Length: 352
Image (cartoon, rainbow, N blue to C red):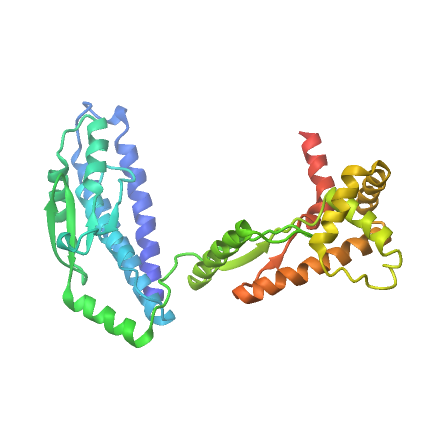
């Protein structure tokens, strides 16, 4: 493995040096005519193409070694992309970042995979004043395919699609591996930190079908990313801050005046919310006290915080019943989490 890495690093440095030299030789002041190509430049291009071939081959070997040592599955699509990238770079070494399109075939009669890069390359060449049919480009790519353990044969179809048939021996090896070791994640070039914000119900309100949809989709995304061994942070951005808590706290103080010492029996928080909303809409004096309770809560007044926590805890227990039933694990990071951080954001915005 260390040998592969060292060889890949050396090849990358040589490519950078050659590309710099090619750029220097392309300087118009060094060229006699616009279309002239010096033998030196032609030689460097050939060497550059060879080195690109070597480095992609080395990287593929490194990935294969990592796959063996880490018990990961091979990514056939990724390996085919590397193979066709080599072929395209050799066939068209002057193209910077040519399109690389390798997909699973939609019909088994067209093989196992397809490379559909020829059409995109034809468009690029056309924009540069060069005429070449996609079929001719596809043929040039096929002619530069390196020897490999995957591809049995290729066929050029339609306007320039390259149909790829995999070797049966290769498929047999992969199937035996799959049956023996089960499905495992492929080698991932870089593990990432993935933040998934999902579910996000509101305190004192029932979860509805929209929350169910978000919860299922979010949990599915998390499981897929975790299967690929990414570092996943599952966030539940609950609605636990705002004006509605003023009316809830004011109603709590009226209905359970001893709430600071005796835990209030709020069995039906939804009904409790509706009661406070009716009072808020119809009782001006209550509305004033509700607004005052919001201000008190935002100032972190202890009695208001106590009432707020009681209300939030009732909702959390109901939410948790649903999450446990769905086998969903999630970290609460509600609106209140950002309350103390907002002042710095406001200062930053004011400064701009």
